[in-house]
Length: 328
Image 1: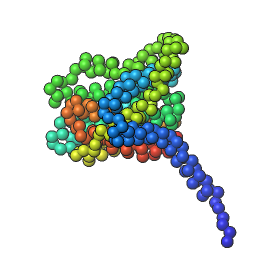
Image 2: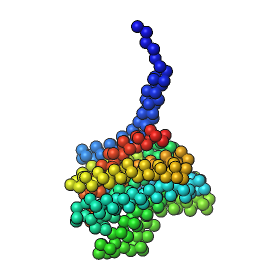
Image 3: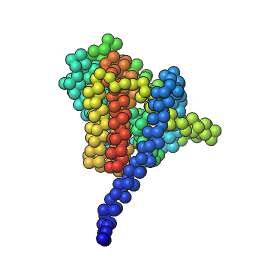
Image 4: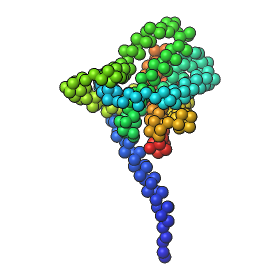
């Protein structure tokens, strides 16, 4: 018996195999660090106080150093792209509006107020850009897109947190203070480090070799620590009673938002392939833990957003795999 092989039938599995291996090479190191943080905390090797200390070093020292030195080296003219900002933020605001409306329609009556709806909308649209999006983009696209990523990150928390607090203010006894909010944003280590990096870059200030090397040492563990802390924090969250609402928020966050960003970037603004990939991967990131902290502060949807952090993080593995297959 003679066997005949079609070259095309052999080539397709080989291409698929290469694509799968490329995706695994990007995602596996990141998943490994997240799992390491989760397991280490789950088995009791690290407790909550230990993770708090690591988190403080990560968010107030290492990540700011990483953001600063990379913004310092980024080409500013290429980093500022208003069409990229629009392609990202128009879908974000649309999904926020959809989330707000969904909460008014489907949440229990006690959770249908303006403040609860604003918190749910935040949970459906706020991306973990620093802990997850940034490492994924660097692993998939390299450092070339870092400048544009930082521009997105700079306005991300400020835009969505301000919108959430403004909508919730009418039903909150303390109301909304622009002064208090502006102060918290200006003193945010992420915003401050990127802002200082832009300023020093624009003024062409030379920090000196010794300071450059010191900051580089501080920046080296930033991404690894960020992923470790993310995994560790997941061990403190549980999928609670409002898991159906959390699943809806996760669907809006992980499925709808990146799809809308892709349409905007690819077909409306016709951005480059690398810019489109960067924006989609950022928007496909799971819900950021800061959204849960806002829910706790406003005392609305704490269980829902805690569950959404867990569900969206788990589902993001499949979302990232899909988008990496399509875009990279």
